[in-house]
Structures are given as structure tokens and as C-alpha cells.
Image (tube, rainbow over all chains, first blue to last red; front, side, top):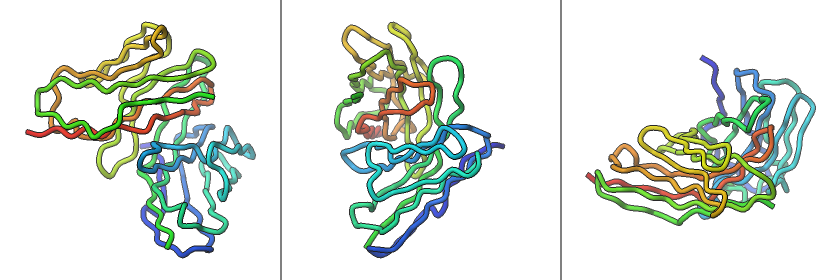
Length: 115
Length: 112
């Protein structure tokens, strides 16, 4: 079955270290998204991509970067991790249709703790 | 810009009680509206959606009606079960790329 997987599911790191969270989908979806989930804020968009070589900043992009070298993967990199980036991170994907917006498919999340 | 506001939780109900979770939105155009559900330890999954005014989305006994005049999309269920305990997110999207704007989420706890 097609799916979307995130790794690692849990990670503890130290302030200042570089961290990369992986996201891989096998649906051949052109759209991919990274959100962070924090108490009191719901889900906030970090970065998104509408296709290979396309990346865009979301609402809370400072301190994060992404790259899209193929359809299946959108890794999220924290260049220099900060305690404020302790959060649960969700990757999602979707397929652009010709009608109204459709469904996003979410991974199971990656819990990141920055000490 | 777009925004979604939903009632803060947690909402605690007894089994078979009636559920309402309020959601209102602000959008520049004519968005599609969604309710997503997150069960403990899992990612979000689509519960229901509505794409135009007066549409009613429904799934698993949950319903929500797109009310353009009140910019609302309240989630209702006539009789909740313990298995409905989860966090519910209201969301909107205005573009074909499916970028979603989420509300803050409402935790529902259903007691036997």
C-alpha cells in the first residue's frame, strides 16, 4: 500500500546541532508539506513544495530549510537547533486536482526535543 | 490572511452525549472547509469536508455544514462513543495545492 513515512519518530538533540527529519511518500503526490504542532497553536506550516525543485516558506519558516530533489522526499533541516524548536513535526502530501482542494495525507509525526 | 478559530478544550462528555465543537473562519475568498481528527499517537486524518456554501460533510456519524453567512463549520455528533476520544482540528484551504490553515485543535474526552 502507498504510504507516507517519517523518520526518526523520536529524537533528542542539543542546542546548536544540525538535525534532519526525513519524509518519504509513495503516492507520487506532487504537493508536500511540513507542519509543526504545539500546544495552543494547533498546526503551523513551516515549508511546502508543489513539485521537484520547488520550495516555499510557510508561516514559521525561520531556522528551517527543505529541498525537493525528487517526487518522493521532502527532508526538513534545522540548521542550528534551538529549544524553541522542540515540537512534534508532521509531514503531509497531496495531489493537485482540477477541482476544489482535496485531502492531505499525514505521516505519524516526529517528536523532536532540543536540550 | 486566513485564520481558523475553534473552541478550546478539553471537552469532556459521557458516552452517548451530544457533541458540538464550534469552528469559525476568516478567508479572503471561498475556501473549502475540513475537519481532521488525531487519535493518540497518530497523525491527522480527514474526517469530513465541504467545498461550498450550504454543503454538509458527514462521516462516522459526524456532521458539519458550511455556513457562509456566519463563516462557520461546527462539528456535531448525536451520540459520542469512548472511541471518539481524540483531538479535532478545523481547517480551510483556498488553493488547488491543498495548503491548509488549521485551528488550534479541540481535545475531546469521552467517559464510559
